[in-house]
Length: 339
Image 1 (tube, helix red, strand yellow):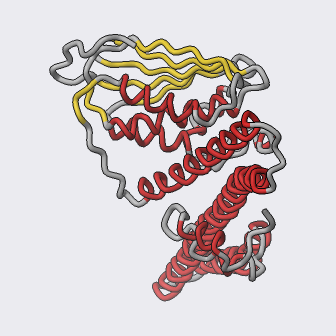
Image 2 (cartoon, rainbow, N blue to C red):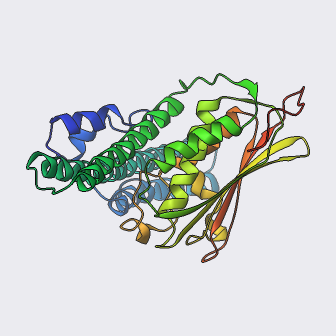
C-alpha cells in the first residue's frame, strides 16, 4: 500500500468515516493552506489587541481620576467599557481558535492512525493472496495457513471499520440500544469468538471464568463490542508473552465483567483521561501498539447507556484490569448455567 491518494477511494472512505461535527469537513483545505501556530496567533493578539486595550483602559482611568465634571466621567466609563469589550472579544477569538486547532489536530491524528491501521492488514492480505495466486506453496497445510491468515487480517479490518462506525454513530447521537433481560454470558462468548478469530495459534494464553448467572438489561451486541474492545486493547499492550483473562461474577446489586492483562500498565494520572476519544497513554507506544484511540471511549458510552460504569485498576509494569459494572434487572433471579 502506498500513500493515500487525494480524492481516491481510500481517501473518500476516510472522509465518510470521520467522527464528530466538522472533524473532517476541512480536510481538503487543511493540507493546502498554511496556518499560523498558536504562539503566532497569541503574539498577534497581544500586539494587535491587548496592548491597545491596555492603553485605552489607562486613558479611561486617567479621565475618571483626573477629569472634572460629568462629561469626563462619562467619557472615562465609555472608554473603559469599550476596552473591556474588546478584551472579551479577543479572548473569545482565542478560545475559538484553540478549539479549531484541537479539532484539526484530532483530524490529522485520526487520518494518520486509520490509514496505518488499514494499510497493515491490507498489505498482508495482498501478500498472502499473491502467494496463493502464484501457486508457490508446496502442500495443503501451507495453503491452509495462507487462507487462515487472510481471514484473520480480514477480521482485523472488520473490527477497525466497525469501531470507527460505532464512534460516528455515538458522536452524532444516533446509536440505538435494544436491551433485553438475559445473562451476560452470550455477549461475552460472542466477544471471545470474535477476539480469538484475530489471534494466531498460541499467540496468547486465555483464561476464561464466567460465573455470573444474574439477569441484566443488556444489549448483547453492544456489550460484546465493549468487551471485544477491552480484549483487543489487552492484546495490544502486552509483550511477547501475553496473558489475558476474561471473567464475570455476581456482586451486590450488579454483575461485574473484568478483562485483565499482564501488559505495560497505566499511570494513575492517566487513568481518567484514557476514556477520552483519540487519547493514547504514551505516544511512544504508537509504533508498538497502533490504533485509532476510540476503543475505551466506546466502552464508556456503552456502559453509560446501560446505567453502569467502567473502572480501571492498573500500575506501570503490573498490567491492567478493566471492570464493567452492570446493574441487575429488577427481577434479577438467577439465569442460565455458569460458563
